[in-house]
Length: 304
Image (cartoon, rainbow, N blue to C red):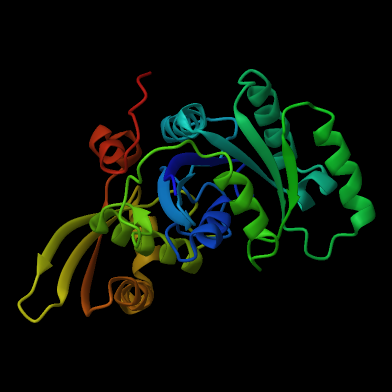
């Protein structure tokens, strides 16, 4: 049979469920997830097989009205992913549309952007339909169909895996002929050092969801392979102020200890071996203005 291989970009407003959908499509965790919007800062490639077709799903940062330099880099990266892909999935939180939330306005702005990029194979994924009435969903489907942008519309629950197989089949049918770019059993294209940093950042977000809004970054400073097959990972958690450092450390260092435990447990599951994880918290006011950090996570550094 003829091999097929291509890229599918998953775009949408912040917190629409892009990373959850990518993880569901790939069948394993390749992108971090948290309730905080704009959790995804860089494009993450998850790899799925559908018969003789290899699909590289690109989980992009949420598209919204940027205010900071990092915001601009993330939004630019998301649109670049859509431009370069063979197919595009616009994922929308159906509950946001029903409630007419700020995210709904972001979604409509994205829709206008897609109209300027007609000719791309594009489908709409209405996510988080759990508990919504069909009578509420049908007007949304009709509204988007009328825009003339989408080949198809899918009603899914990425978290529960409902209708995810239908989305995968649609994408697979639109991938071009060509050799596979990755081994058949590879699930993601992200360096282990970077994946480890992302897992720790996820645990920080989950633990400090309200107290530390967007003020932290994690970098893997050292990766040491040990003779017994284990690995030592040293990471730095960067925050912008001393008060934030105190929040991350917690009383008697208990918060950072718990974050480290949660991250280490997941890393051991991911890597299938023992992990010695050491976390250090440093104050760097300008981490979000540091071009090296952008390079580390695969973003272009926007000039003023």
